[in-house]
Length: 97
Image (cartoon, rainbow, N blue to C red; front, side, top):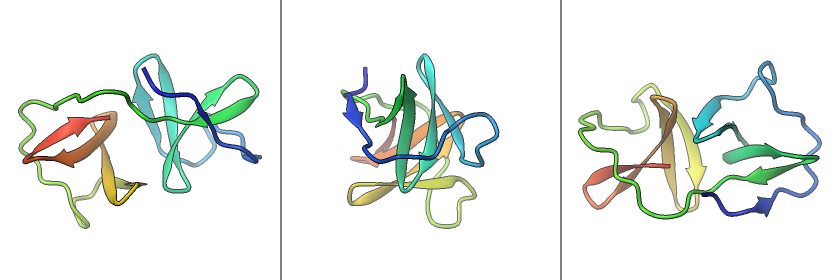
């Protein structure tokens, strides 16, 4: 489950044709925007952050600046949108976010 962190002052409406990269995340869709992921939640937008540690098993692809996947700034590093979710480098493997 993701923490509820409202993104205040967000006037843009996300949806199928909004122009931002859509990322399936559990039972909803997040949108890559302003360096993080937004989740439409009722009448506002939340910044969608995962809880816990979820290893992506068997992921041989190395993400990086020129890997061809959308980079999403996340704190002090970048995650990469791949196979419908975010991959984050962590201790020699990739996590699903």
